[in-house]
Image (tube, rainbow over all chains, first blue to last red; front, side):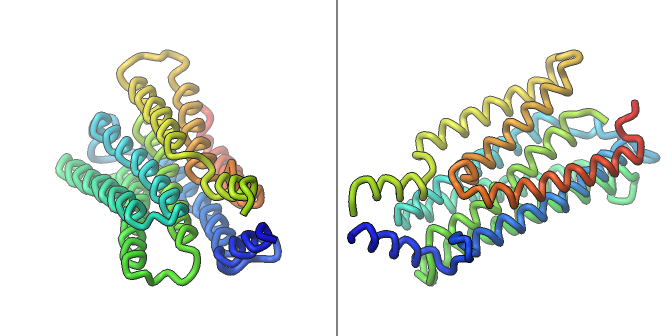
Amino acid sequence: MADVAVHADHGSGHGHHSSTGLSNNKLAMWLFLGSECLLFGGLISTYMLYRGRVSDGPHPSAIYDIPFTSVSSFVLLMSSLTMVLAVTAAQRNDDSKTNLWLTVTALLGATFIGGQVYEFTAFYREGLGFTTSLFGSSFYTLTGFHGVHVSVGVILLLSTMGIIRKNRITGNKAEVVEMVGLYWHFVDIVWIVIFTLVYLIPA
Amino acid sequence: MSASTEQQHDSHEHGMSDAGYIKIALILAAITALEVSTYYVDFGPLFMPSLMIMMVIKFVMVVSYFMHLKFDNRLFSFLFYTGLGLALFCYIVALATFKFFIA
């Protein structure tokens, strides 16, 4: 009997469920992330096609700063760890730890964005503008789109912290944090692919 | 609540312990260091395959452990990997039409 009560409580805590018994929010998020694969697949493919097309301006190998980008990649990778720690803290209903790890994740994300702004500025000063060459256009479009996704992630993290502090979450708090976490991890896996295909494999 | 129910509930919700996630992060950091080493050390013909394998390992580890796909319902895996597979198929075909894979 006690077990039944636990299951009932568990179910209601996850908000609306589909006929599959799974959370609608989670289903929608995974579907969204699946569709995002198509977006980034297109951008990465376009870059792969055009990275050797340098009619004017610097060549990729002349401007990429691999040590700097490696540190940025490490920062984003570690933000995935802090994000998953935020999710486990939320599942334990530990609001202070959840906020702490969300804050660290947002800071690491902001550090990554800062690094990207620095990198774009350095590239521009070295003569690579958005319209300088097909390589420049495809590079800025791909990494810029990823940067926008990271920025949206940081905004989501800060918003989640705000609504947790004000106790405004009506449904399952852990699931809300988990949804933000799924988005954040997706941004990380996209960078895993970009780091290898764009930076480490020469044109 | 019985102990077994609580345990099942915990493993479903949490997937892994915090220490487990830290171990995964350390493995990912080590693989990243290996990836970066390919920039400084000449791996010869193994350069491209090793980078691709390390990229796939990192990708699958983040998706499986950090995104909990390994512990979650298989429908989520189906939704995500279908999108990923469709993207790979579409863009490999598109790149092939541009003779990208011909040296």
